[in-house]
Image 1 (cartoon, rainbow, N blue to C red):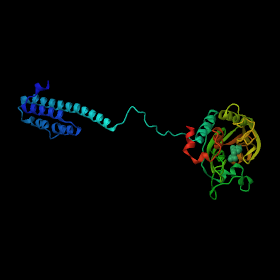
Image 2: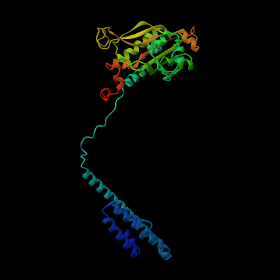
Image 3: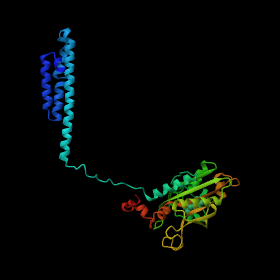
Image 4: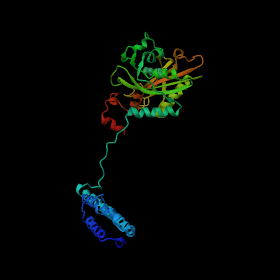
Length: 345
Ligand code: DAH
């Protein structure tokens, strides 16, 4: 027992007083002061320790030990008392705050992914699973990548088909993700098998056109690539995106960078072909353009058109999201009204 080891009356007195003071400390602040008084540099116990030199040598070990033990005991008691006071404080604060901790908490406003992001991610997943890589290109482009290299020279009538936003003479916002076809072929040799989702810009704005919109481009170049493969890949994509019963059809069309070219329609997901307001009675919905890469494009970029063939297509991501989630007006996608966005949780 510590008490037996108290070798001086003085130490014993200090120790007793310390016990009393600790017990009397009713706040953490009080206790902090008690701690300073008994254990701090200028404390009584430390002063005793400093007296060690004046104690007769044979008594020094016993004296030192007793003082140190007393010091440790006081420290332990202070810590014990501190825990007690902390708990008391916590309980009284809890009682004072009048919070019923058994009540359910407030719901935090959980966000949701934008329908375009949802469609975008699903498109990527489907094409990744079919062996495509994902490529990217800049939104701010030059005429070469947006037009010339895509077989659309300056005097070509197709240049007027889209109202291009020009930033400067040769600097523009890309009107199509087909630009990435060129960027990929500049960098990589066939075999090429990529999709490239991204933003495009055209000066148009109504219920089915937004000045900023999204396309997903695809490009496959290899020896022996055929139109039949193009059709199969698109049919498979449409089935996975919209459901097994949704057929596709190609309508002959014209694009400068593909020959032959086609537009892709899918069976109306609402009426399944009988005709409704969504498909305007036709039974079909337009999804984008496609075709076999024009040999001129290959030539311009330095790929041998005698050796390689390729297919390409470009689909509207916003269009896909609108059909998939039954969104009647394209502007809803860009107004970011929370009441609209909340529905995609
Ligand atoms: N870039 C075309 C557009 O914006 C869509 C397109 C058509 C992309 C045919 C293609 C394609 O890759 O082969 O209207």
